[in-house]
Length: 378
Image (cartoon, rainbow, N blue to C red; front, side, top):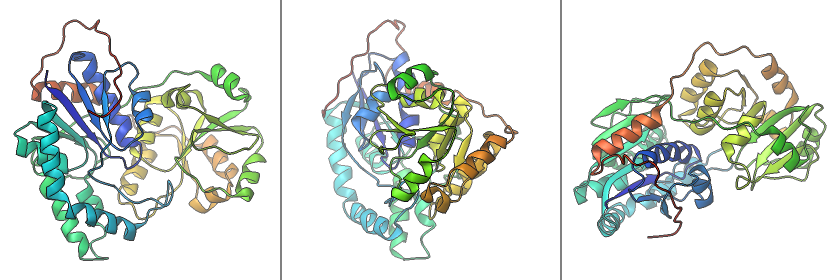
């Protein structure tokens, strides 16, 4: 049976969140098809988003996004050094992936949204699909004025993306002109299940207080910032491991015990930086968002506009976030008005159908097949 090979960028969790929703929808219709995920995202995170789905995970990075100082700040110079090194190995990586795809009998390649696997799939004569709301060529083009070395990087990604048979373009997007064929699809995302009582028992938190999820992978809070957060009355704060602090009103939750989307569905508000994954999760779960600005990241303006259109929201200056001075922003969020626009959903189902139509498979009429998780490297 030919395999679906799905390459996912490891820059942040948003690429993995939406990819998992699409993979899950595809597995529902074609449970007999082997699925190989290639990504440097943590395997535990991917499997947590795909309960019961038969997948094989292989580490691999074919883009690097932006080098991040933390969840908000990026290092542009370090990014250029590392992405230039990757571009030096471009042809070698393409050749290696051609061998991998042939060895594993790939039937279709999907990317979100590295370019090298598209070039490899084209060389191997395989159908190839891209999913995303921006390309790295567009992100990196913003830095061309800082160094001419960015030109080669941008051009490499443009050439790689031109190999796609089709781009499924998600909401909150740039033009994505490097892709020769584009189809717009609705928001990808599924609501979680409210499990507040279970979370309260698990963490010892007070369900009568206002709950806020600190949705960051890293956040550089010093002792003064943590002391400020601990003094905030009437709130309980939650993180997802490995982010954790020994503070009375901050509770770390293990995503192995509760899926992230259920954690988010159980809180009253979310505090984060703008990112596609958290924005989509807040929209589908109807959760208000207190957001801090991101510097040196071109996607920020598009995502900020989407936040203001589709969510109850308030902005907290990054300097206040780093001080742990959350209460003024939380009070603004409590008073924020409901959004003026709604967002259509169901993009994962459309994407799954397009994967089926482009690949060598047919939907399985028998949906009773069991899905066995098969972690490991093929």
